[in-house]
Image (cartoon, rainbow, N blue to C red; front, top):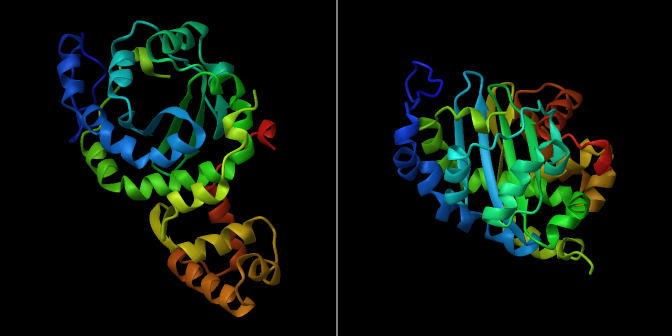
Length: 281
């Protein structure tokens, strides 16, 4: 049986009988150790069991990077269907949309006892970030929402560190089997300072008007504060900079994003950030 394949360059044809060998030699499997290294700050800080980064493009082709190649391979071949629920941009608990038998299989085979999916909508694709939790964190995953600002930072950090892997995975993108379509918690006591230091990056890449724009760390920090509704003087005080320096960073950011007005820049910036669900507020 052939999976749905689109006759375009870069897409991979795979038959069920050959799928195991295909995945074992694919970047989605072979890059697992590299993904684990990049995700080490995330795993050490939040006690997360697994990380998966995917992009689904408009032609239904997919790129996948996963720190656990065996889990990805398992669910490619599993007869247990994943959810067919259409998700909106934002953050979703697995228990709210994945079928119970799928969650049970994840627990039985890989000790994943809950997780979250973060969905970001870009111009040419949809990004999915999946985080799996082991016991006892799985029962307290709601506490993770208190630290979504750190997760937002980590997504930018990951995309920066993994950009070569993402480029390779894009060249090798493929289509999925139908089964895949569609005490006090440790995470309540994490050190923000330690995580910030581990995942800090000097360049932040975002998508503006169908193109990638690279901001400096300071430009990003200024935009983030302004997007929260703060005034220039308040941002200057928060970042221990002068108002004039904030204005300079803002001017540089407008030039990079090809925006004439601050309001236009901030609207585009907000659209790039994670849209929080009401339950995370």
